[in-house]
Image 1 (cartoon, rainbow, N blue to C red):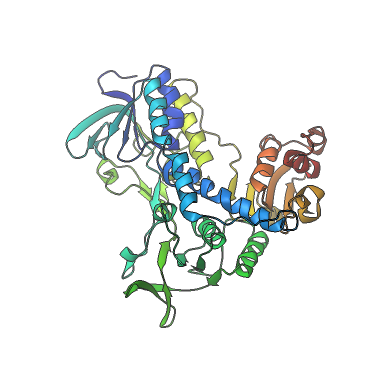
Image 2: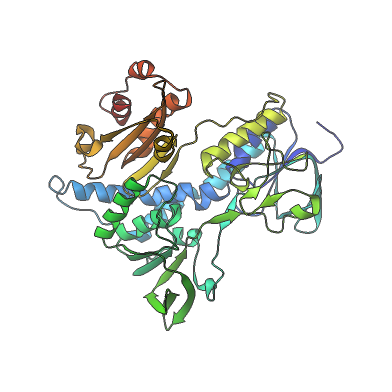
Length: 444
């Protein structure tokens, strides 16, 4: 590495795209700096994945208890305030733990906001210049905000996760990951929930027959869906809020969540000044995660990529850059199968070739009605199904499952999809019995 810079490698942002690779990179003796304006760990540990799955555990338990009402004598109710406090107990320690992980490995953490001055220099908080041989943009995504009158009256996902008192009526604009997960949580915790869609498709990146079953279940539980809403403005009305939408229609509510998506967090980074190409989908990178400026790289959600913008992809990219910068590889990045899941109740999880792609390509798609499979009857899951995709040689190349245990079932099958096991190889994999792994392998 070069010696005339402050650092060999400088990361901007301290999320999974950074810390998973920066710590082991620093441990190899490479000089590593990490610039972060907020909490170490970024979105996922502090205001995303870890926080939401902690809140969701009570939802999962409540749903299961309701299904077992003839076995359990009392149905537990979610104490939202206590649930949020529990969430905070879980995540409060993470920034310090991740800070220690980085610093113990030899990395230097610099607090502040970075902006590029030139290809090898960033200015922190407008006053301090930091130089590096290589610089990695790992700033992730930030919430999109509707550009309509009254947009300041709506809140983002972080605000929802920190609500100590759940509003009586909650209106969610958007029906992607965030909108549907939070609608599920709030509904189970007792709020009156309305979900407003720009179009008429919920969770567009997931298998729609499964999605429609989840939506139907939420409707039966009292969630209202308004399609083609054309939201136009938010206004105050005494101590409540009004959503103006459609043809002079309006909805009175107590709290508004703007869940209209997430966008690359690259404003004010100075990318134009140094010639780093980007668009609304993210920073452009090649197969070595290099940007259009050779010594500047980008990783994780901030990149324009055909990979899903989820933590596993950021983790793998971060590990790849560690190997690249430490001289362990010079090969292009080759992403493994990256699974995705939406934590509704039931969950929908998928990995590999989608059902829609398989049907278009004439691949073999088989379906299992899991609701009638004995293992899923233990907790009386009413909505449970899976579909497997095999290629023309008989390899398992894709799986989609809807169930309360879908994420674990998909995890069990990932090796078969990644390494393209044929039916004979799959047949030799017998999981622990009884377990979700055994059930998943048994039907693959």
